Length: 416
Image 1 (tube, rainbow, N blue to C red):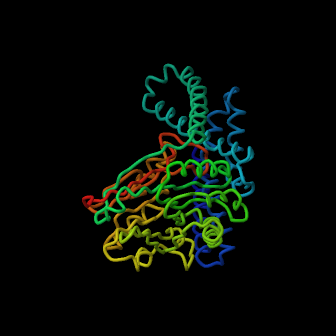
Image 2 (image 1 turned 90 degrees about the vertical axis):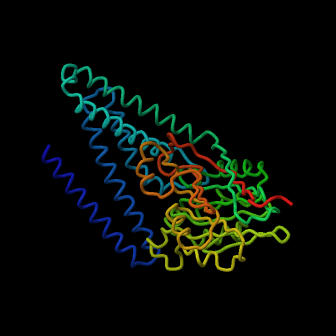
């Protein structure tokens, strides 16, 4: 046992050293090299974490004639899942990418279930000693069955249509001519290895049925390059609204190493209004509203010198006394925006996926100033964080359902 613990510590130390060295190189190298280093960093971190879980599962279930082969297959598929993400990208997801990521989800649920069972054994050891054989049999069969059920349930939640949420946000100084302006908020679509053209086409048709005044996409639209996904997102050009579709980058656009090509493609080919630390003013007679958008904070971490969140630059030129709707992918950037600007009426964000699946909710909740839903930050400022439309990694949604949101801006002034 002591030898295993020492080996685990050594592996952890090597993984941390590798990640730190890679991060140092990311900050000084050219974009194409930086992208490969980022991939290596992510894979090193994930493979290290998954290895602990895999060892734990194999050690627990190797004595089970019923579940040993299942656990081994799950472990193998789990470790190839994130390689499949980079190797098999097409217009629509394939069996080759979906199955390994499902195995990854099952791997996580099995690790958590087994850990809970072992903690229960430790806490109630005086009692369990008397029924140790029966308890072991129960654990070795109950946990895998529950993990399979939870994986399938969570996967079904991603296949079913996302929930449509509705919020009404009071905007101080909103001209009555713009009262009840209807914004459809989309976030975290993650077109890539597990989401493709079929879903994008469905989403466009669904959004158009609501006849919105504006559509906003708050980042993490794609997980690969324009070359790989241009056809998958093509139908976004058919989103229909009175004032257009507004878009800002998320952290995953920077992981693609193709962010500038994406901004150009979405703007020039699909007609989206890309807000790269910029704003766009809409007018209804003499009434106006400023849509502003800022880059994601991941740009700074990956040393994109011409990309970083700049709320002041994004809103410079917005007419005085005009309400500001800010698009910022991460809630951390939403908080930065509110601190940086004398006025921002509503910030629309995503990123958190509402935790995606339990118990990831807990670290995500602790790591972000706003988690999911509508927050009243001050009497005149609100933040809305979408749970997102899809997922990253495992195609699972457990206790956090995907959504798109109708945001209605409500004027605090009386109607004429």
